[in-house]
Amino acid sequence: MFFQKKLPPIKSLIAQGTLIEGGITFSEGLRIDGELVGDVKAGKSAASILVISETASVTGSVEADHVIVNGQVIGPVLANELLELQPKARITGDVAYKALEMHQGATISGQLRPLMGGGVDEGDKPALKLAANNP
Image 1 (cartoon, one colour):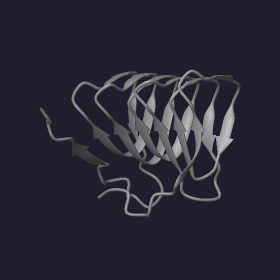
Image 2 (cartoon, rainbow, N blue to C red; image 1 turned 30 degrees about the vertical axis):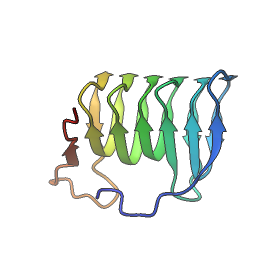
Image 3 (cartoon, rainbow, N blue to C red; image 1 turned 45 degrees about the horizontal axis):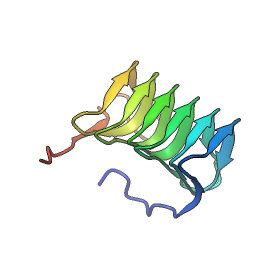
Image 4 (cartoon, rainbow, N blue to C red; image 1 turned 135 degrees about the vertical axis):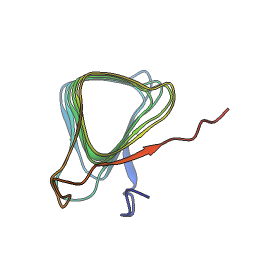
């Protein structure tokens, strides 16, 4: 609904049990199941999606167009389009987003800051979608 563009394919995976120390820049799609100590940022050439799974841990800043979190992030998060926080998401850091979808159980310890630029009038409120309460 909010992210009308076709999502890019996930072409890279950091598998569970893997620890990477250092920053990563990716294009299109990246899924993290392991641990990353460093910044993760999408390149500017195309639409991007970043998935931080339930088993993942990222210590550093996170930036992509579409960010899906169900694991732990310690650091700031910037979602240029849509930020999806699934039930086991744990973010310790400030969060900036254009649209936000947050499921029951997700937590944020930091400030929430909606992005107002990029075609959204200053008087408009950011899109906020409440996730359905699934049993």
